[in-house]
Length: 468
Ligand SMILES: [Zn+2]
Image (cartoon, rainbow, N blue to C red):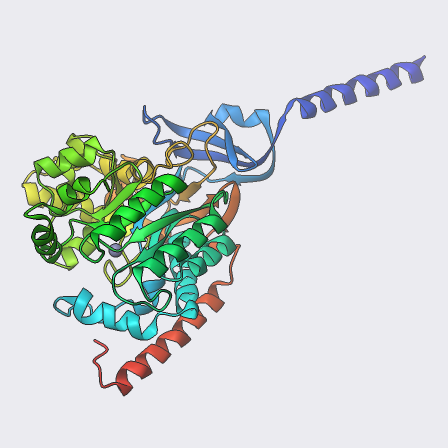
């Protein structure tokens, strides 16, 4: 009898244990004890919260008490650190990382320095190695998605795929002969091949990237606009960036602004993402809103090039979709986006002489959901919400510069460094843990980039060119 009772007790005890285990929902990654900033429409926050990830999607988000419902393969106890959507760099040229710090203070640098430099050095190898370096910098700085415009864009795609990041990649189209295409027609054909190869990729969105309105003909811009609608892909371009562009377009169009000119040729639509957009008046901003054009705001590049302050405050008032970008590493000169935050907030305050303008929350909105909207990716990324792709970063609150934290958005904008980013998850995959990159050999990437930079330096010196 005693033996029977003991067996019954053991059976019941085991049943309770196994039921409680079975009741837990299996997930792949569970982030616990986080200060969760969702960046959703209501700006919901959890001072101590959890995010559960299954496959490549967010399946739960809420207060810490929810943690007990889940059985995770990997649990990240982030001990009060900030958990937020991955940052989205809405405009860059990652491969130009190999040219970083060359000719920084040269006047009229694009035409006098960068174009000749690219003619001499752009190759498949350069684009791939530069993209790997750029990807590494972005991953370590909290960027999980970026929009890129360059040559041999297929090499950038290869580098993005290998590291596991997400990207919108635009193959460049420009009226000057380039290493990958002798004519704009060749470049358009190359872009079509690139689109056919990568359309439907889970993390890569292929795109057209006409360099700018003034560096392409009206016919080529029209062709790109038509094909982008046919292929249902974005068009990335530099827009309303310089006086030179303004003058060329005014002459070509009988006095129109670059934005009005694009509308006049049928090239303004929701597929278009314009980078910089500095020289835009009230009517231009109304056109951007009317045609749902996305804007990438690149503050550090704009002020370094002394081109002006983009009217982003006015654009946000008119509900234009504005995201943040770094521009290429010859312009910004970093790719981390966190380094942009401070400048975006402070320059707009100074420009308008009003310290209440461009509050920290607006900067973080632009860097996350704003960029996602500008790139037409907001259904999938840009905020932490049920069913969205799991693109998530964790930022330390333990460094001296992040202590204390009263307002997490202020801390991120005015105090955070790129090195405060601890973990990074893209499409449900942990790419960086405790600042260790899990999907690439960091030393190999930096060694390769350094070796390539030595070749560039030697070549420039042999040609008698300054490397300053
Ligand atoms: Zn650019």
